[in-house]
Image (cartoon, rainbow, N blue to C red; front, side, top):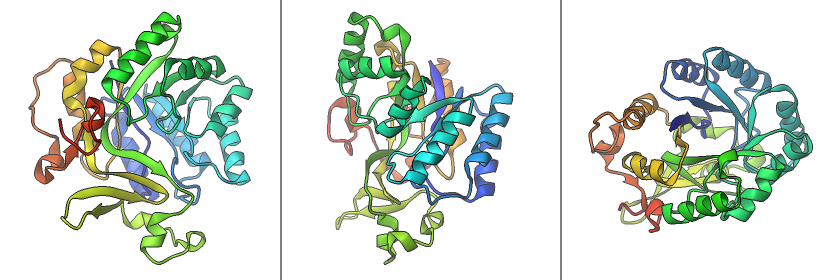
Length: 298
């Protein structure tokens, strides 16, 4: 089983991003996803900068995938998508069906991200015929559904032609909206948001009146309030047929998390406790994997 480092979902300064990926070169991640997936206004790094980072990571021996926007709304965003498809030389992660269509037209292989709704093997087969090489299971699905999908794909004769990746650690990407929640929280219009997302390197936490962690605001994206953590489910994933476990970046502690996942994959003995800051805050969840409410802990 391989280990992947997902795209940075937050808006970080250019230097922080550059330093992060310099560390990633030395990390145990086999696959590294690069690119802006949330908002096209976040331009600390532009397309040439992402392509330069990709070249450096490829040279280090990492597999690189360029991730694209999860909600494409403007012609300018389609134009940027075309530039990435035409110039990257890398596998592309499609997070909007518009990207799937464009990549299929260009006969380019792609990864289907978590925001592409794949809920059965028939959908998976259709997208495979369109060029899907790997899919990241939608986070709300459970292990039983995954097992059934992969079993059906086996019977349909294409399972050995695709890879399955599971979002295994990080704040769950739950929903996207044309409205920017960060701007609204600051009393600003979306068109004049002043790029306030950059002030929140892990998003804005939202709590209930009982002070229970509920959601995290990240621009147009709504995330889980708690950290999703499937470290202990490595063996179950391997048995089902999962190929890749994904760790989603946080502003701190990401590479310690990758090390622990790597130890699990290599069969080394690791602590059964939660990882790093999650232990301190006791805020983690894994409910979706077990077919329970997502914010539950099984």
